[in-house]
Image 1: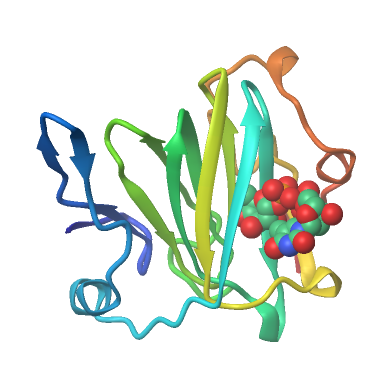
Image 2: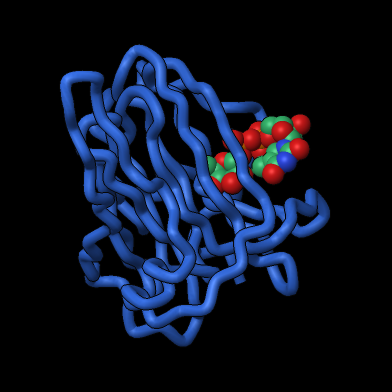
Length: 180
Ligand SMILES: Cc1cn([C@H]2C[C@H](O)[C@@H](COP(=O)(O)OP(=O)(O)O[C@H]3O[C@H](C)C(=O)[C@H](O)[C@H]3O)O2)c(=O)[nH]c1=O
C-alpha cells in the first residue's frame, strides 16, 4: 500500500499493492495496521456501504454533522468515478477547497475522506459499483449536504449538466455559503 498526500490536510489517496498472475489479480483492500502506520491516524471503521450507479449519476455532496460526522475510505469495485472531497472544516486554511480524483477498477486507488469533509462522486462509466468504509454509523437526523454544482465550489464534474442524474434529495441541497 502506498499513500499519496493531497493539498487537503488529512485527505489521502491510497494505492494498494496489486499481485497479478495468470488467474487475474489480488490486493488487500484494507489493512488496519498498514493504514494507521501510513496515515498516522487511529481509525475504527464500523460500517461498510456499497452503491450501484449508472453513468451521469451524482451522489452528494454529503456529510453527517456533529457527533455523527464520518470519515470514509472510498473505492471503486467496478467502473469509474470522479470522487470529490470538499474541506468544510470552518477553521481550516483550505476551507471550501476540494480535490477530485479518478477512482476506477484499473488503478484500484482509494480516497480517504476525513471527518469534516463533504463527499460525492459522479459516475463516468456506464455503471459503477462503489464501496466505502465509514468510521461512524449512518444517522439520517444528522445528514446534511451541499448542492453538487455550487458556484462557490466550482467543481468540474466532467459531464454536461444535461447528463446528470440526481436524487430528489440532492436537488434540494443547500449552497456552500448557506452552510453555517
Ligand atoms: C448513506 C446511507 C443511506 N441509507 C439509506 C437511506 C436511503 O433510503 C437509501 C439511499 O440513501 P442516499 O440516497 O442518501 O444514498 P447516497 O446518495 O448514496 O448517499 C451517500 O452518498 C455519498 C456518496 C456519501 O458519501 C454518503 O456516504 C452517503 O450520503 O439508503 C442507509 O440505510 N444507510 C446509509 O448509510
